[in-house]
Image (tube, rainbow, N blue to C red; front, side, top):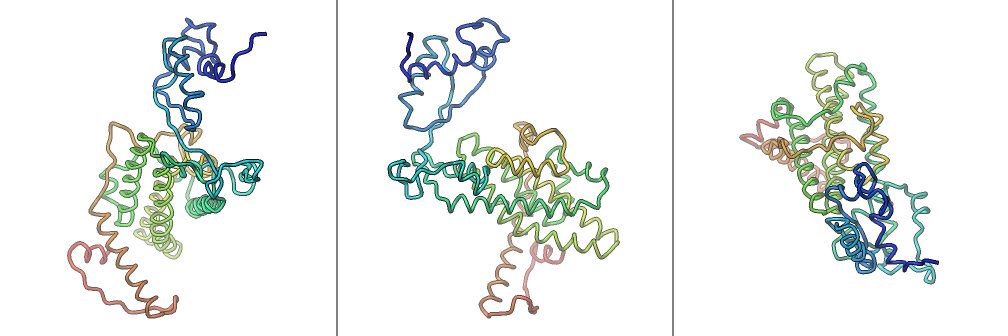
Length: 349
């Protein structure tokens, strides 16, 4: 019988699985589509099999097809237990991914593994981190529930018009109120940063930055501040009050949609489920347009970011003072503020 060495046969995998050597000249064959005319490609692998497998795939591809199978090799560390020890059945520290998925969900495990990647280091799989990322997925879901729940009274035409089809322009952002200018500008800045990080394979930092934005800026600040305008519209039919609430809803949905696109490679299931429930255009988030292209720059209002951050610092100072003097949470206090220039203008609005 013809028997090939394990690693030798594995070295043939990139092209033997798509029809080699048969139909090697057929432009419509899988070999031509997925190997010969594949375009730029990247192989992701652990460093432990660089010589055993990766090197053999390169050498055999060059020898037998006159073409290497991939242009880039992205090497990550090995997944270890929470203490950094190698998983072994003998020591009993093996973590079954199916058990983890059953307890915390697929997205939480996937996000933990991807964001745990640090070049040159192994990945300690700590259940506490998986639980924390499960909580992040729950936070995202609850934010989406609030946003979509406040669209239920709109007509189908109004909902359809709110679907995100392209990034907001400078003119659109300039016409928004300060909180909306701030969050959209910060969102556009996030898109630029994450796009650059993914291009450079800095996957962990990209995922962490999306979570920081969604939790610390979007949920804790903008979503909470938008409730004032949205709830006000439930008590008043005044045109300006209704317009402010509609603007808040539109920006909430816009920022959520952009972040679902950014987060989808890290958490594909929860992001797709939310996107399908929200006003959208297209069949799937998986095939939706990335929020940034090479032709057009996303507008960022740096002045709005600066003004809103000054207001955030002011709010934090008041909160710290209340805590320092042990003021009861529900008790109203009088605050005297001295401000001038842009800060005074922003506060007056």
